[in-house]
Image 1 (tube, rainbow, N blue to C red):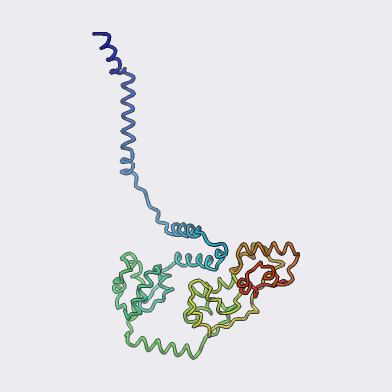
Image 2 (image 1 turned 120 degrees about the horizontal axis):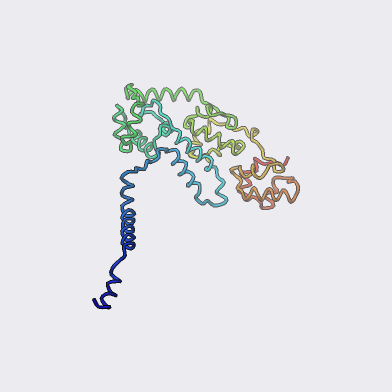
Length: 309
């Protein structure tokens, strides 16, 4: 064999150790290629059924949305938290789909979309004669109906007589109107007012605690979910004792407590505390307006809650 052929053969052949190394490398490559397939075949991920956890996570990310500084301190924040709790802590109870209220449907776990469709169907004159009729509403899926079916109780009383009974009950309630003092009433008393119910009653009291009391019934429009039309309709059943308002002493209150008030932003709370540190004691509430610490509109809203002694 010529020297030239021998040199080429040296480049094209491998020693025993090199051949073993190549085989091991090929085996490792094959293992890496087929490992995901074997993993998926033998390991099944178990999805979490903890819906409460996912709800809390969604709520957390919703709170991360940017808000204007002066609007960040609004009444909707604490009330939204209360709303989330209401939705996540629903329970089942017997109900008639022909007469169940909107608040009760939400407590049963129905979404706002489902509630609106059911309410629209009833307003147009629709009635449920059997539990199966309830499942025919297109927004009620089979799993939801399966959960609610054992709790559905249809009133067998003739439908043509029901309007008479409702009218009679309205006449009786008109004869004995309920008058409620807004700053001292509890949830039971507020819930007796037509159109308020348990959910709104809890929100009214929660907002009352944040404010320190109501100055007038128009402030109910600031409560989450309450529409101006409802406030006007219940105004004849509400009285407000402004002497029960919990006043804020500008010379004693801390920054942490002051910024919790719905009418004062964190920036304005800092400005008030800073102004107090410079002048020693605030002699008159109007100093906040005169020194442009509060805008005229903000001052009109908050002045009834402030004192300097």
